[in-house]
Length: 273
Ligand code: ATR
Image (cartoon, rainbow, N blue to C red):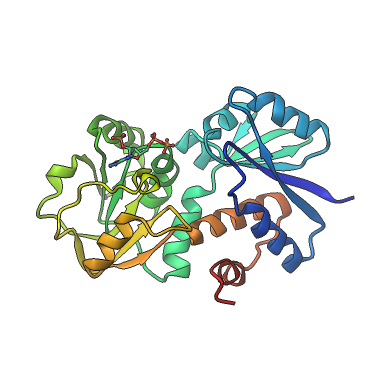
C-alpha cells in the first residue's frame, strides 16, 4: 500500500515540498504520496490526529505550527529539543517522533552544495525569530570562529545566545544590535529575518562583507533587498532553495531510510535542467 505524507501549514498553497518529495520518490523508487494540508489556526492537533487516523505516516510542518508540532511529538531528537521546534513528524507504532531538519538543511547546503566551509569562519545571523531558532545549534556544530546574532530587538538575540550557550565550544558567540556592527566584517551573512517578505531589509553597515563573503537568504523564489544589497557589495548571493531541498532530503531519510540526490531536484526547481 502507498504510504502517505504531507506538509501542513497556514498558508501552504505556495509550498514546493510536494514537488520535491514526488521527485525524491521517483528517483529512489519509493511508493509514497505527498500532499498539502491547509490547517486553521487553533486546529493543529485535531488536524494531525485525523491525518494519522487515516493512515498518514509522516508530516512536514511549516509556519506557524513548528512549536505546536514540538508539543504534539511524544519523542524528540536532540536537535529538535535544542531548537524547541519540530518540522518533521514520523508516526510510528511506538509513538510520534519529532525532529528538526532545518539547520542541517542550511549547513549541508552551504558546506556541501556551495562548497563554502563554515569551520573557522565569522558568521553573522540576521534575526532572532523562529527561523533562527532552528539553525543556531547546527551552525555552532560547524565550529565557526564567531557566530553573532543580530536583531532589532536585541533581547531576543540574547535569549538565543543564552539558550545555546552550552554548545558554543571555542566560538565567539554573542548577540548584537545592528548599530553595533559598524567596523566588523563577516565571511558568511545569513538572513533569517522576515524583512524581505515585505520588501525591507535590516539596517546593515556598508563594510559588512569580507572579501569572498557568502550572503545567504533563507527566503526562496524572490530576490530580496538583502540579496540586492549584498550583490552590490561583492558578496556571493544565494537564496534558500537549497536549504529547502536539503531539509526535505533529511525528512525523506527519516521516513524512508534512503538519502535522495538533491542536485537534480534543485536544478529542476531553478529551471536549469
Ligand atoms: P518567525 O518566528 O516566524 O520567524 P518572528 O518571530 O516575527 O517570526 O521573527 C521575524 C524576525 O525578522 C525577527 O528577528 C524580526 O526582528 P524583531 O525581533 O526585532 O522584530 C525580524 N524582522 C522582521 N522585519 C524586519 C525588518 N524590517 N528589519 C529587521 N528585522 C526584521
